[in-house]
Each structure stands twice: as structure tokens, then as C-alpha cells.
Image 1 (cartoon, rainbow, N blue to C red):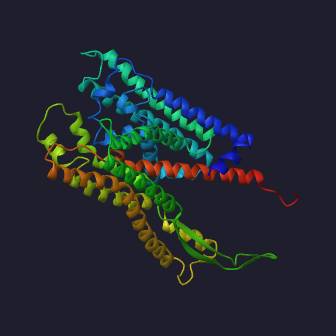
Image 2 (cartoon, helix red, strand yellow):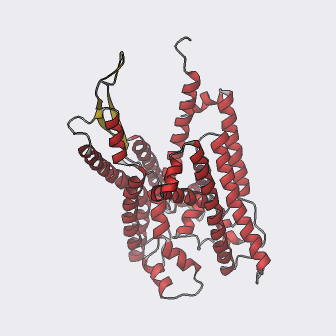
Image 3 (cartoon, rainbow, N blue to C red):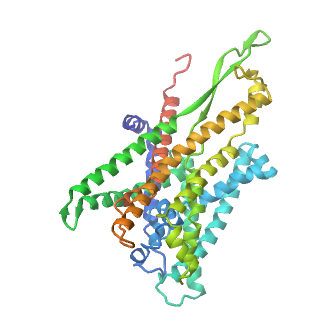
Length: 445
């Protein structure tokens, strides 16, 4: 990894791309600390409990802590990610958009413009809701905000989301890697300091060294390292379906006759099922956060359906596996793959072309999707499982409402680990690919 980065730094063109990407990330992190007018500077201290156990905690993770601080880039990349997912789904559901997707560069420009429009609309809606959320929780400087105050706050957050979209696209054009992925990577890395601070707090408590805290800290670090190894292995794991092409004679030349394979990734859906499942399962806790008065709904959420409860864990696990199958179903078409194999004169050994090939690919795909979903569930749900066990044990042994987390560093650890490791691997693969193109020697060299 470091050797790849060192070799890329020696190539002037790649060095410019790396420096440009680093510059955009620095600009983003600066914008994530710019305050918004009429928002109290003490918002971070008052928002600690509000951004816990709901979708706001996950969105705050994706924004690098900017959401809890209510800064200019508080919305982060969430509107752009949501808009991209919506457009991707619409290209499958709507024939005109599907036609655009097949038009090449011209169609790609149309879909990009549609994504930008959806991003601005989602940012506007989210900004309005966030502005009222800040006012409901007494996070504004003015006690009775007027229409102008709301307009300034909403315009600031909407402009910040549009700026993030522009920065991500600039990375795509002139930098290294995917822009949104690189910004997410930087945001999560920025939150590592708080994670290591939480681990360090186990070792030193009230100014005293604690042996059992050291053992817990070592256990957390080892588990995190094991998760990294599992994610790296899972990202490279694939099921290869052998394909044999028949020989064809075209004129005086013979084509085909070789054996190849169809690689199917074990984790074809990536972190998308985690994002979808977190967004859905955390809706009740998020709604309860916006309610200022206590009622039956808030009591139900606080006691039975928050991040530290078993019903929340079970529903999240079911949704994660379901969304893994759903995302693979909309992103991979076995019929189209089987037709391409047939049109090129290929066949799977022992399987007839046509419908039997489609059924065989579906069967293999469903099996590896289940394996991939279970591995993703293991990574994403293990921190939640640890927190739930700890919460249950402490409530039984110590007493209700006496719970304080010993494993706070695990909060959303699986999701963040998958994003960080996945982005790092993809970035270094792109660097290696670009270096291979520049070092390639032609036949006459």
C-alpha cells in the first residue's frame, strides 16, 4: 500500500491528482467547521443526547460530526447519496431513464443533471426540517425566529449541500477515486480521534490506571483489526463461474475456443444495505427526537425500540439481509448476462444455453448473496450486539438507568469500517491501474 503511494507520488500527473484530492478534502473539513448564522455556538454541548440511537447519529457520522455542530456543511453528502440512489432506481423503473443510461456519454450527462436537481430538492427539504429541529431544541440564538431567520438558515444548509456535491464532482474530474467516497472517508477518519479517546478513557478513569479497562481496550482494538481483515478478505472474495467459448471461423481467422470465467463478488452490494437498513430502522427514534412532549410513542421508542434494544437489533438484521438481496436484484441482471454469453458463442460446462443458464446463474447468485449478506451483517451487527449484551447485563446486575457504555468506540463501527477499508482499497486499485497504463510498453518499444 505505502509502496503504491510512493510510486504514484513520483509520477507528476498522479501527484497533481493526489494533491488536488487532498486540497478538496481540506476545503471540505474547513467548511464543516464554519458556523451558520443564528445558530447557538453551544449547540454541540446541547446536542449530545439528541444524536444518539437514531438516524441522526448515523448521518452525523457521515458528515464527520458537522451535523451535531450545525455548521455550514451539516447535511454533508447525504442528499447527494440519496439522490444518486433514487436516480439509479428510477433508471430501472422508468423506460426513458433506462434509455438515457444506454445512450453513453450524452445519457450520462442527462442523468448527472437529474441527480443534481434531486440533490438540491432533497437538500432544501432536509434544510427546512433541520431548521425547525434546531428551533424546537432551543439551539438558535433568537428566541422567536422570524421568516428571515429561517430563510438564512435554510439557504445556508442548502448551499452547503450543493457545495459538497460540486466538490465531489471536482474530485471525480481532476482527482483520484470517487468524490463522494473520498469525502466519506475523510469524515470517518476525522471521527477516529473520538473513538480512540473513548478507548483511552477505559484505561484511565478518574485519573487512575485501570487494569480491566486496559484489557477491554486491547479487546476492542483486536476486534477492530479482525473486522478490517474480514472486510479486506470479503472485498476480494468472488465466485467464478467457468465459461467455455466455442471456436468460430471468420474469414481466415479463428476466434474463441478459450476458457474464461464469470466472477461474481461475494459482497456485490457493498455498504448500501447498511445505509438503507439504518435509514429505515431508525425512523421511529428520529421521529421521537422531534417530539418535544413525552407520550406513548416516545416511551415505546425509548424503552423498546432504540439502538440498545433487542427488537431494534432483530429488525435491523432482517432489513439488512433483505436490502442486500434487493440491491443485487436491481444491479445485476442474470438474463442479460446469459444472453451476452450465448451471443458470444459461450456456455457454462454442463449447463444448456438459454433458460437453464439463467436459472443456474440465479441459483449461484442467490447463494453468494446470502453469504455476503451474512458477512455484512456480522460486521455491521457485531458492535450493536456487543452494546445490547452490555446494556442488558448492566441493567440486570447494576440496576435500571445505571448504564454507561464500556464499548462506546463500537457505535456504528462496522459501517464506518466497511466504508473506510472499501474506499482505501478502491483508491489504491485505481492508482495501480493508472500506473500500469503509464508503465505499459508497446510491441515496438
